[in-house]
Length: 398
Image (tube, rainbow, N blue to C red):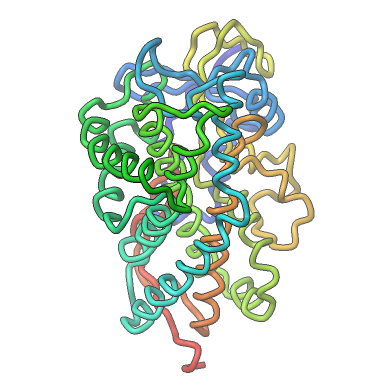
């Protein structure tokens, strides 16, 4: 069977400039031809992409074939992202305990006024670039509050941005090492916080990790550092992207925007449909443990693979009218935007909370918001708005 080559920069050119109405335009030909395509990033990484919904979902739960350990043996890993069962399970249970509702509710109470203040300042400016002024700042500050990183949100936000660039949002991690200089930069301040929480635990995630440990055994400092990094990296850019994507979509859809103003109880449904149609993390890397036939294409053992959640969530074989943003879509919650199986995102409750709070406050404080200039987007492996000029009309001006 002939294998199609897929070039993200070409396929997503119109998405990057904001001229495409739907990301489906980047995937239509691949989904029509089959399930698998090949991707060469131009710097020595040749990867196999799985694009269809059924095959992506199956691969996501099959750790016997598709390993999440994508770095060389002995190299630093981000846990539990880069772990397979049974090792993965213990770390996942620890992370799940950090995201219980009773731990998220206080963060919502503390961060809602921050969201309101930031939104009011944008409304006061009239026209703002949301990509530069809000969609990264709010999630960064929220994560710093949740994890227990103090007030240094600008430092951690800048570090996360550099890590994403260095690893191509995780794509180059398949078979390569994490940037040691960036790991070395963040370790000292994290170690200082970890030691402080060992002495005086609080209610933040660092305190939970150092006191709960792993299956009853306290964790060494280097492991705690890795877990804190994982919490921050996994939670920041995905949430920022989800926020920006959904606000951008609503800015172009005044009917849906008004529906949510009149029926704020539908905001959680809009969030689920938003992450389906504009999945923030378009792909996640894996490595094959053996030869595997996927939709009629044999992917060789020890191959770098990406599971393309973004295309799976738009697969016409799995969704009716997948390019349509339908808040009342009945089956939208089976989307793969937060992963599937053992690697489903434990932090999704925190991400959903942030998106809900922001939409509630933005819709409450405006009578409308609309796109006010050229839009620039990152497209793959992460879909986000980097430049999003908006005109915001205050509610009292209606």
